[in-house]
Amino acid sequence: MAEEIREETRNPWITAIPLMLAMFIYVLDGTIANVALPHMAGTFSATRDESLWILTSYMIAGGIVIPTVGWFSKLMGRKNFFMFSIFLFALASMLCGMAKNIEFMIFARILQGFGGGGILPLGQAILLEGFPKEKRGLAMSVFGLGVILAPIIGPVLGGWITDNWSWPWIFYINVPFGCLAVMLSKKLLYDPPYARRQKGVKIDTVGFLTLALWLVSLQVVLDKGNNADWFNATWICWTFAFSVVAGICFFISQMKNKDSLVDLSVFKDKNFFTGTIIQIVMQGVLYASLAILPQFLQNMLGYTAFLSGATMMPRGIGALISIAICSVLADRINKKFLVGTGLVLLGVSTFIFGSLNLQISNINIVIPNFIMGMGMGLSMIPIIAISVETLSNEQMTNATGLQNLLKNIGSAIGTSIVGTMLTRFAQIHQYMLVGNLSELNDNFLIRLKSMGGALMQYNAPDIANHMAQYQMYRQLIQQSTLLAFMDAFRIFGILCIAVIPLLLFCKTTSHKRSGQPK
Image: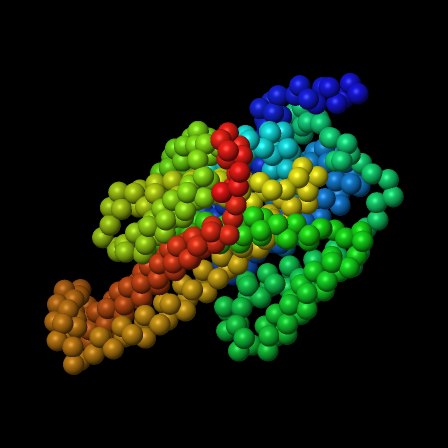
C-alpha cells in the first residue's frame, strides 16, 4: 500500500530524467559513428562495405532485443531489465573504443545493440505510463527531445570529436553517462504491479530463434545485395527466401504460442497499426537522409567531418522549435493536423535537397535542414501519441517493443536501400550522359580543346589531350553522382507525401473538450 501511495504522488518529470538520459545516448549512437566511419575503416584497414557492418550490426542486435522487452520485463522486472540494458550498453561502448580490428569492433557493436535494444521501448512505455492520457502529447514532446534531436546531434558531435580528439571517444563518452543513468534509474524508477518480476516465466525458444534468423538474414540481404547485383545472385535469392520463411515462422509462432515473446493482438488496434506504418516510413527517411547527406557534403563538396556534421544543426534547431509547438498544442488541437503538417514539411525539405547543385552556398543546406527538423518534430511526436492513444497501460510495454522493432527495420532498410539507389541511379545517369562526350558534340570539342590547350603548357600534346579527356570523364562521373543524390532525395519527398492519406484511418480524442473521438 505504501508503494502504491508513493507511486500516485510520484512526479513524472522527475522519473523522466533517467529515461531521457538513457534514451538519448542510445539513439545518439545510431548516427554518431556515421561521419567517423571512414576514419574507423582506415584504422582497421577495412573496405567501405566492411565498415558499414559497424553501423548495421548495431541495428541488427537492437532489432533482435526490442520485441523481447516484454518477456525480459516479466523475467527480471521492468526496472531491473532497464538498468541491465543501460549497464550492458555502457560496457559495450567501452569495448568499442578499445577495438583494434574490425572483427572485435563488430562484436562490441553487437553487444552494444543487445544492451541498447531494450532502452528505447522501455523508456517510451515508462514515460507514457507516468503521464495521464490527456497529457500524453506533452509526454511525447519530452520523448521527442531524445529520439529526434539525438540522431541530428550525432553527426555534429561525432565530427567534432573525430576531428579534434579521435574516433574511440565517440564511444567512451557513453560510459559516464550510462553509469549515471543506472544510478538515477535505481533511485527514481518504480515498477507498477503488472511490470514486476513474475514467477514461472517460460522462454519462447522458437520465437527467439526465428526472430534472430529473420533479422540477421534480412540485414545480410540488405547490406550485400547491391554488391552482389541483388536477385541476379543465387545466394541472395536463397538468403532472401530464408529470411521470408524465418519471418513467417516467427509471426506464426507468436500467434499460436501461449507464452510468446510478443502479443500481436495490438495490431488489431487501427491507430496502432496505421501509426506504426507512418513511423516506419518516417524512420527510414530520417536515417537514410542522415546517411547520405554527410557523404554528399564530404565527397561532392569537400566538407570536413565536423563541418558536414555541423550542417545538421539547423535541423536540430527546427526540431526544438517544433517540439515546443507540440508541447503546447498536442493536447489542444487535432494531432492529425500536426502530423499532416509535419509530413508536408518533410516532403518540401527533401524536394529542396533534390534541386541542389555543386555551386551551392551553406544557406542552401541550412534552409532545407531547418524545414526537415520542423517536419520531424511536428509529425513524429503526435503520431507516436496517436498510435498508442487507444491502448491500455498493460499493453504499452509490448506495443512499444513491437513498434520500435518495426521502426528499427525501417531504419535498416532505409540506410541499406539508399546505398543501392545512389549506385544504380549514378549508373543510369552515367549511361545517359556519356553520349555527350562525343566528337559530334561541338560543346564537348570546344571544352576539350580549351582544357587540352591549358595542359599543353606543362605536358606533351598527346599526354595533354589524354589528361583533358580524363578530366572531362571525371566531371561526368561527378555529375551523374550528383544526379543520383538528387533522385534519392526526391523519392524521400514522395514517400513522405504518400503516407499522409493514412491519417484518415486514425482516430484522436480531445481530452480537454468533448472527449469524443474525431
